[in-house]
Length: 534
Image 1 (cartoon, helix red, strand yellow):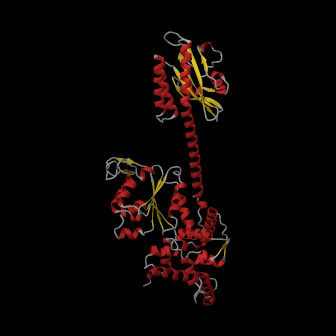
Image 2 (cartoon, one colour; image 1 turned 30 degrees about the vertical axis):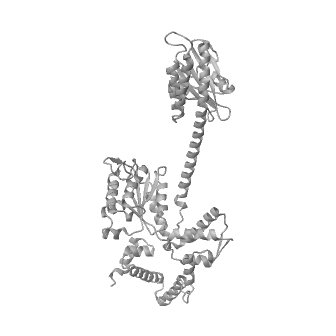
Image 3 (cartoon, one colour; image 1 turned 135 degrees about the vertical axis):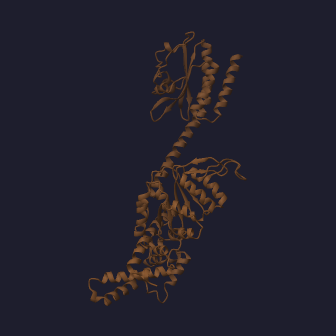
């Protein structure tokens, strides 16, 4: 009766341990510790078949050192343990010192008990898997008598049956984890490839200048400030910086500073502690902590509340933060990329944005040109979006007429690349053939095309340029050898003067309007004497 009660107690404790949800090796060690305590087991080991090694190996043990566990490997059919795995039949050895098939692969220091020199018995039972046998459980236990030895073998067989389910779950979880890791790596590889510089569409001089800057700063930890209108691709450039940097295997966290109220945004950025405010029922890390080791992309930074500007300034200066409601600082290693479609110089002048924060963010400024200033990229962008949306929607919209292409080249694209992307997706979704007809274009682009067919529609940039060239040749035929320089100089003068008038004399806006570098504009203004004109 005592034996039955002891076994029931052991099985109850082991069943509770199996329900703890720990790692398999921890579960086994906890369970075998019960046998050590209740049955004087000296050593216990769990062996599973390793497909990669094509061997049975010890993955968890009690009473064995890591070195001894590492030596515990068996080919199928090798020794007592290998035979149990091969045949699926238990082996019970009363005295392992007298069995020639017992290999003692782990190098047990003694094969008898230390106190009374009783022989050590060995029991090894198979563990069933999803298909066939997954492994085996073995114990070393002092020999008492054959009846007790047989009873111990029966108990270990029951325990092995309980472990079989845990092992199957472990294998399923491991397989799923491996698949997730593999899938995650594929996604990372896709992102790395997608945001390589040669995959970013932009052969225009303005975009090549942007990509050159990105290539220079990607490997650094310098803070970057991306400027540009809505839809120009600021997030794409931020991703290009991140995925071409040493931080590419760490998180890239994006947050839109204009999408949340100041109080919610503070919690999202810096986290909070339990009880910091109503509804804070537990501690929460913020986006900065989540991005530790990686990059945080702060979109629409120009809308940041003045109080949060102060806190962000401290993070940039000290590389540490405090969660809302906490007084302990948390060190972080995060690269900051900020973006805005506002003129931060003007916002600073008006007192809406802190000057010290502006200079902290403006370590490297990248001005991304609007689509109207890089029209030579439009045909390639059209091809890219058509290919993508054709694949996604199983369409074959391919042929685009010269007339429609000219319309798309002349259209000002106030929504920039994002507007072009949406227009191409709409066209593909609504298409019924390979022909790209005018009706597939959005209404605003069709209206623009209709306006261009008025009485002065013949005055295209190309026709005007032709007339200007003809006139330049006629007026300066006595200045042979200098006609090109004279004509270009006059054209530059008029273009810059008109752009400055159009932008109210603000040179930064005029440079953006023309699609040239601001330093280039300042140089031309001085050379052409425009700054001296009233």
